Image (cartoon, rainbow, N blue to C red; front, side, top):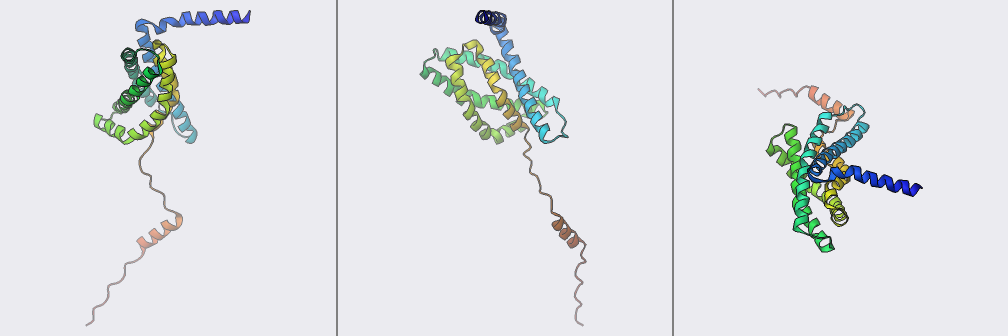
Length: 219
């Protein structure tokens, strides 16, 4: 009885969710899921920042910017995977390897640049400022990217149907988006170390000490 009920539940869920992964609705699903997951990543990151600094106030505008940029990435991912599936047809390991390689060498750097430029524009920075930040953080970003996405994309291209590619990536990126939020909003400004009490006293005494008297000239 229980296996039958479970099977009917799965079939019903597949029937109810199918419209979200068909036709034009698929593009909307991919767009909204990208924004929601990127926003959740920022919420997780800010929760950690609030834990470390209890007096910190959550920045919902920053989360809104992340949602907007995430929604802009959804259509790009949607059409990018359509292109890859048409350019490299099949699920042979050699074909999947080509997809992963092209995705890692071409689209990953582009998507990282889009993220930093988009977030910079939403925060009121110029394109040149956003590009400078991207260049400064690129290798740190790309090293982490290479540790995560080749394996995730192997699963994506080998096991999943094309209509589920973007949603799968969006859900995998929850942890990745938390890292992106950290990398983007990390405070890289140099911090000056406060002087110790003894050093401060020495500096104060040196500042208050009278200057040496001028030597009298011999008549």
